[in-house]
Image (cartoon, rainbow, N blue to C red; front, side, top):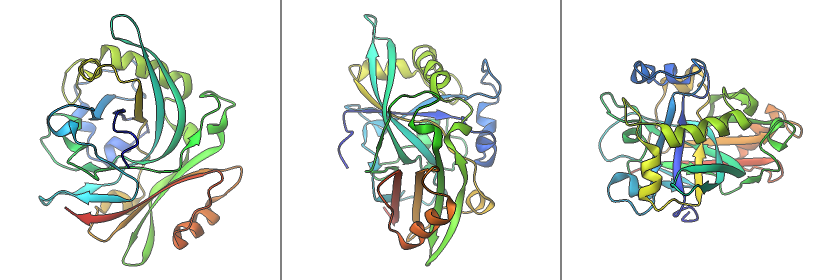
Length: 277
């Protein structure tokens, strides 16, 4: 899935209540002061095109998660990704973020203590991230648009058994969404400094030649008890489903997940087999 090799990959941390606490990451942000205590904590890079080092490795797959070669707890993070256009001013600062499509995304993460930056947990090589090959066009990224009626659910298949992994939640349940999220992201990209677990996002964009497109994952949902306490094993299958609640309730989504066959209308599904690197 090389479609997005020229897109910069960014993520939003802490945009769903209690996720950071469940992931054991809230302490990482203890010194980060935000304008809104209920809002996201910051942004992080997971892929920077044409960059040397770990962040320059293209991590996105639509069908596989590759576990790191060194033993480590690895946990899916069911999310929604926005496929965006970026515009810049004369100084190279982002002047507009325009979401054109959205889809199911897995911000798979290493659960390691002592990592200095969020990005060190996010990209360990090829096949460390997931994006559905089925994306849904965005008519308008504001209340009254297509995303109003969408929800996100996630599952893990292990030894033939299907378990709920993340909570089934509406996209409008994100702490920041629509124009509030866009305005916050634009400000964060342009002003976020290298501090604590965060990095200066603007410098990554300028170093990459001001990419015109971005994949932005907007935050992980809360886990079920099973999801919070179970990490990936070789042979598992991770399933993230973004679905139109005007067309489907949970029962047909669960049935499709059991059959591993998803309808195309009103659904963006990501199914990834977990393999050993």
